[in-house]
Length: 201
Length: 105
Image 1: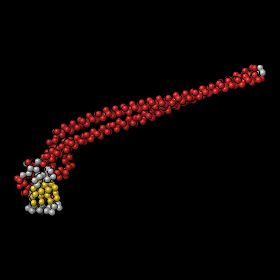
Image 2: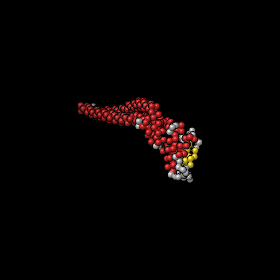
Image 3: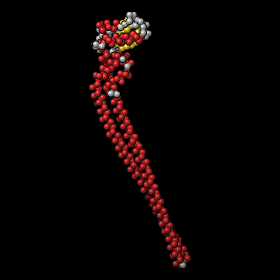
Image 4: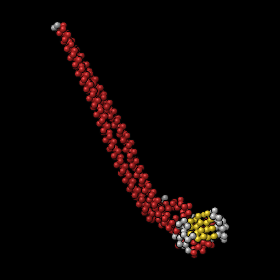
């Protein structure tokens, strides 16, 4: 009786110990699995963050560079523009003082001839006005006017730089052959010529 | 040993067995709980490492871009100097050609 009781007690305790060991083993196995999964998840999160940071870093780099390139392109354009503007001012200075040059009479005659031809009338009215223009200069101009034509002399240069404006007697047809008007008409050619001469473009 | 004593012994032994099982269960819960805390620490450490590496990458990219931007500034300055020099050398020719164009076109 006593011996079988002791065996029963041992078995009960042995069963309990076995169960306890199994519980601990299960917990340890589960623990191992939790750790493995946590490590893998942490690695994935780490890699995701780094991948996004790579994209973000490239975006920052591009943004800084493209901003700088834009600013520098603008500086270059502004400098070219300043140079071209400076040259055009010099051209305007030369044109506005043309009456002092040997070319004046021939140029004035040609401007008048072109303007008269453009308004296409027997009785053109031609206004002429250049800076520092003298009477002597105008004798040559009178020669190219048709017989019915009228020459009006402006004391001041027309359109600031000087030139010629022809109209028909009614003033309905007008041809502006001033330097300013010619500069505007030849604007594209002028810019191309200046750019190719200075910058070789 | 009487029958009552034997039953008492069995009851005591079963109580002892329950304690063993309960203690194991408590220990198992503790193991899981500690493991979950450790897992969270691992995650937090990975996040912190990633954040630090991200900051370093962004800072590095910014520094690199600024160095490249400086190079762009230098190149631009060279181009501007070239244009200024060309302008000085060729301005008179350009003015003459432009005047001729306006007079004779």
